[in-house]
Length: 112
Image (tube, one colour):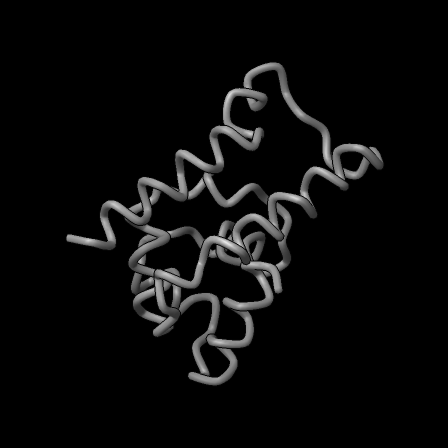
């Protein structure tokens, strides 16, 4: 299951709208929509904001690595198929090493 699907299911179950999620976390409605639709790399969202979103949705932080990596793989497929274009600078965060560092940081701040 991708992160977008996980967020979508949790928001639907709790009857939260995109605007509810945005107001609670400070993540823009556009970014929330793109997260839900698996249309952006997770690590483009500040890690503390993602933590707030997951906590607001009661999604256990220790179960999030696989959905984040599923979304990463989906985005990589979109790049290969020409459905997502990388900019000259986006390669700095649109890669597996950056995603792993992001997940590690999420684990660190979740332990606090």
